[in-house]
Amino acid sequence: MAEFAYSDLLPTTPDTQTPYRLLSNDGVRTIEAAGRQFLEVSPDALALLADTAMHDIAHYLRPAHLAQLARILDDPEASPNDRFVALDLLRNANVAAGGILPMCQDTGTAIVMGKRGTQVLTSPGAVSDEEALSRGIHNAYTRLNLRYSQMAPLTMWDEKNTGTNLPAQIELYSDTEPGHEAVYKFLFMAKGGGSANKSFLFQETKAVLNPAGMMKFLDEKLRSLGTAACPPYHLAIVVGGTSAEFALKTAKYASAKYLDNLPTSGSATGHAFRDLDLELQVLELTRQFGIGAQFGGKYFCHDVRVVRLPRHGASCPVAIAVSCSADRQVLGKITAEGIFLEQLETDPAHYLPETTDEHLNDSGDDAVEIDLNRPMAEIRAELSRYPVKTRLSLSGPLVVARDIAHAKIKERLDAGEEMPSYLRDHAVYYAGPAKTPEGYASGSFGPTTAGRMDSYVEQFQAAGGSMVMLAKGNRSGAVTSACATHGGFYLGSIGGPAARLAQDCIRKVEVLEYAELGMEAVWKIEVEDFPAFIVVDDKGNDFFAEVTKPMAMTIQRRPGLEVR
Image (cartoon, rainbow, N blue to C red; front, side):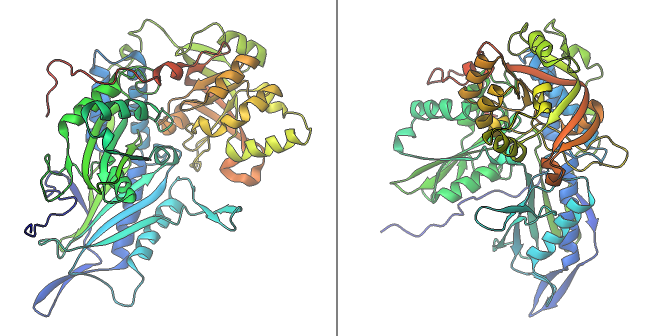
């Protein structure tokens, strides 16, 4: 009989690298009882921590993430489009750091994971920890220029926006590890819909547990991530799991760098470990896709985390998750010394190059200026002159409409009504704005995932509308076919720089129809020098069609590629 041996499933070593800043000493005190020292935490302390965390991750990024963007600008192997996207994301970070416009218009679902030491107490007779944390989240979303995205189900089919971005996802655990008795630790995340929708679970078999089988599997599945979640990505892959849900949760934590301190080799006790060698191989695989930072190139991913978990012999889950260009997470902790939050970068300007234009012009191609004030036929004729991947600069009016507005317009078409003139006469931008700060024309106003509107395109274009569409991410073959049949175009907008677009490109915003839908209304906006790329043209060409085809099943390492 084997002897008993225990190991945590996720045995991370102590984190000594994260810089923290002190928020307050209020609401925290130590008390003595039964010969032990306890940490008492007030609800106000929890609310303050959650409030500040949600503010910070809406406006600031980790220094390491910003440094990765800056390295793209200096990489001679990066494509011009890689550099263009990276530079725009760095500019966006600088706008967002002003604390007014959030870095992304989808300010996300608030997620909190906490680990409470066994000698941490909360004030007796007060609200629960979950309620106190929710209060802080409520304070942040209602005070700041953030968007309310949570839909409360009234019936199985009817929903209503909660108007506060609550409820949050809050998961609190008891931390019984020695040395953690009087510490309350937290991970705060804001997960937008585009990024969350790129979490996948695959129920595989032992057939993938070999180098060739795994690379063949990942070559296919990782391409299917597309660009709707705004790359470059922090990619996480988890192989194995004691349950499907544990595999998915581990992937989410790994994408947030929360599990970076796992062991790098396994043992007979079955604990998780990181496979550093496979991480580098997968990163090299993604660099050969050609997808790049949204519009062609090398930087589909900043980095990769691969975690191997134990598994039941009859089950082999594989989970994939990403953290997008809005890399929004922050660590927090409460100790006897006070309330602490991870220090994010509040002054990202030093990551910008001193001269930026050189990074955009090394292809020899300037952006093609498109005047959106012209008749739709002339706009389409101009776009038809250029191949896919051509960089554009748009100026003039755009109509903004997405899911709910499209559904309402479809009802009108189905009832025999005509296509609204605004969709016949103007390009349509799939987007939904965050709240508009005082003195601004618009709140953060970045693109929505285009694929959500795919089912409407054929019917809308046949009725003369949606002939030029603007959004983020790849689209289905049905959209390419519709554009070829009806002479339409799909233009890709950079996913991620919503704050910069609001500040630098959007000059006027007004509601055209369905004002009662709030951010889901049909809007008309005036833009100036709005960046875009031709993704699908009127000849049936689709940039993403080529880069989503699987290639070789084994990946040779680049000379000099080493584990580090």
